[in-house]
Length: 70
Image (cartoon, rainbow, N blue to C red):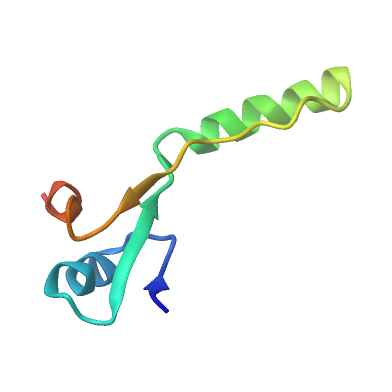
């Protein structure tokens, strides 16, 4: 059993680094997502339903957590 999250906040990253109970989270690449979501919403309003869109996520674990703590 492991405890993972999906927000990658500073506290979670520190717990992953310390080897505490939390072993991972994900980087959802949130930079600029607000703009993308607004563009998608506008397209739905103007053109109707669109294809499902997926975002890649990167696992953040003890092996790469330092990259996210910088």
